[in-house]
Length: 291
Image (tube, rainbow, N blue to C red; front, top):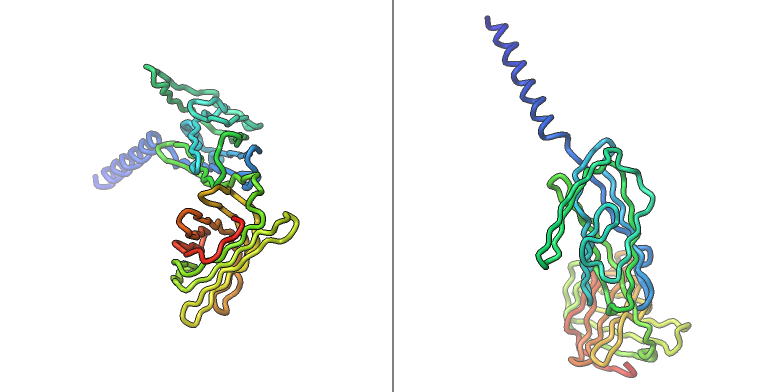
């Protein structure tokens, strides 16, 4: 009697597990990536991006539309489906679907409605990879640094990938500019100090190396960052943004390479800097010429 009951219980547990697997399905995994071919482009040139998506082998996912968000001096929002059809936004962007694996299930569905709002929504079953080429026209954008993010939803999970790019000015009027700054708040890899000096010089001729340095003392540790001017992001009567690249050292530690955007606030006579591990706030301009 006990033996029969055990078999019945075991059969019942197995049945429940099978039913759960049928209704919930296997865990779904999905790969999504955003790459930008050239992360520094002059105003008027094109920013070329590639979006790649692929479910894990053997998985079938319910895929919603893709959303590309670009944030910077000018914000752009772009929604498109898995056939590269634009749903909303996408000003200045053209989307091309590259060669990809077909959807063997051949099944997709969606709906849309509008009462003057232009709202739409859709999703589809996907099992193959998808690859898109997106070309952004920069003619009507402002110069500066932009953060890009691609996202989609699949099986109640959100997947995203991030990248960035910089649109550079074609204005060469800042050539011959030089300035020096002191103090302010410098943060480098966890070190915080107000005893700082910065010197930057942009040569008159593009072929000549333009360079500068940042120096600080934190107790017994000396911080030094020697850099070259890589590009001019923007220049106006109010401010200039300069992209520099170089190596910094803290004490006797090894050199660390980093790109930094240095901002010259001409109105308030301040210098700011922003990098992955280097930042400067409210540094006083002590000398400025031809900027």
